[in-house]
Amino acid sequence: MDIRNSLASQNDRKDEKLNIQLAEKICQKNQREAVKELIEFVFGEESKSIQSDAIKVLYEVGYRKPELIQNYVFEFIDLLSSNNNRLVWGAMTALGTIAHMKADEIWKRKEEVINAIEKGSIITRDWGIRVLANVSAEKERYRKKFFPLLIQYLKKDRPKDIAKNSVSIIVTVDENNKKEFIKVLQARLPELKKSQKKRVEKIINEIS
Image 1 (cartoon, rainbow, N blue to C red):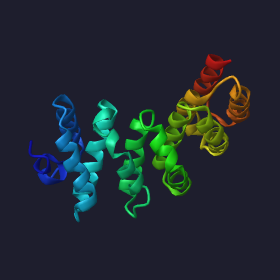
Image 2 (image 1 turned 90 degrees about the vertical axis):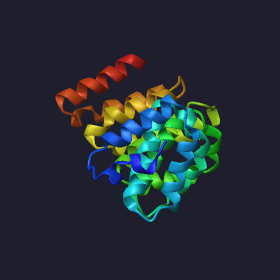
Image 3 (image 1 turned 120 degrees about the vertical axis):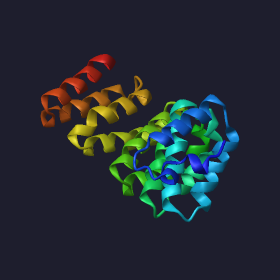
C-alpha cells in the first residue's frame, strides 16, 4: 500500500475523503506497518500538509480500530506540546479513541494532557475531556483526581458544548459523585436554548 501517494494533499485534494478512505483500507487489512509509516510522517515530515493528512488518517483509524494505534499513546502525548495546532488537536482526538485501552499510560503523563486541555483549542478541550473521563472510568483513584477537573470544565463550558461534554463525562459518574454532576447540569439549564436544554435534561433523567 502506497501510503504517501494515497494522502489527500498528494492528490491536490482539499477535502478529507481520500484520507478517510485510506483509514478504512488500513483497518480492513489490519495494516500496522501503514500506521507506523503515518507516525513517521507526523514526526519526520517537513510538509505540514502531509503531517496534517497523517494525523487525520491516524485518528480515523482510531475511530474504527483503536487497537491499531494504541501502541503509539506516548507519541500522541508528545504531540500535545507541538507548535502545530492541527497536530495538537489531532493527537488529542487520537488519544480520545484509545484512552479506555491506555488509561495507565495516560495517567503517567496526565499533567501534559491537562496542560493541553487548558491551553488548547475548543477541539483539543472537548477531546481532552473525553480522554480524562475515559481514563477516570478505569480506576477509582484516577476518578478522584480527574472528576473535580471535569466538573470545573463543565461549569465553564460554552452552552452549546454542555450536552456533548456531559455525554463524555457520564462514563465517570458513580454513586459518590452523581449528585454533584446533576447539580452542575441543573445550574447551567437557564443558559441553554430549548433544544440544548432538552438534551441536558435527558442526561439528568437518565442518571437520576
